[in-house]
Image 1 (cartoon, rainbow, N blue to C red):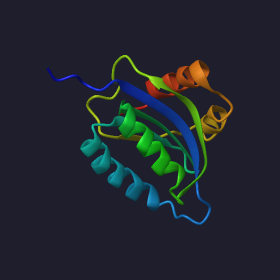
Image 2 (image 1 turned 135 degrees about the horizontal axis):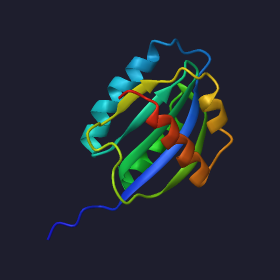
Image 3 (image 1 turned 30 degrees about the vertical axis):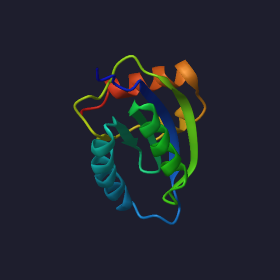
Image 4 (image 1 turned 90 degrees about the horizontal axis):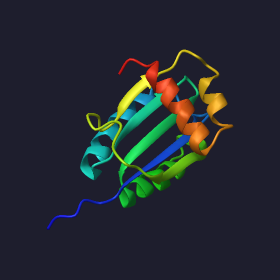
Length: 132
């Protein structure tokens, strides 16, 4: 019998390191798509020109390994986990990594002040406005 691993999610915000050019964002997204596919991780990365907000979902061990990798990535600063925990079902099963920008330059700054269910609700509202 093949038992699938428990789904787990992490929602975080971070800031692009000041010494990094905007062009690095495409590198981050491209590499993440490849790594996520190998690890059976899916999710959405939103960028506002300065800040990232990402929801990762997949096997718990893989998701936790990725968030640790992100915390140690010098291209990110101020990594703050807003929510983490078990997930009933994937939101982004069709994407190893969906990527979008957001026009509201304050949207991700507001996310930094939320956590738990409030952070998830704000993320879902923002996601509903995006074209993926």
